[in-house]
Length: 101
Image (cartoon, rainbow, N blue to C red; front, side, top):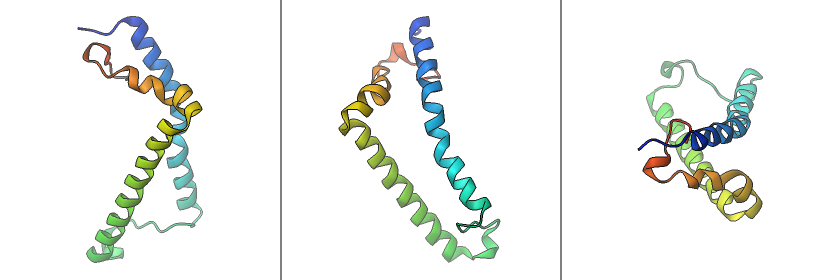
């Protein structure tokens, strides 16, 4: 079945509230890259395959670690859960899913 219009509008509202948070980290990382405060390579030939695999592994571990702890804190810190994350768990049923959930 299809979600109700009210449900879709609420999902759009939640998405719009979350957008600044979701764009903050990429914006900050782009700032660091543009100002030369981090390593950024335009091609694998600049560093070679072994270092590329090493950096990729470190990056993926760092990102997964950060996502895990961020999600855990959203559950553990009650105001964050209540005002930011609880609506995420409303949409666990098939009839409430839309592209905005």
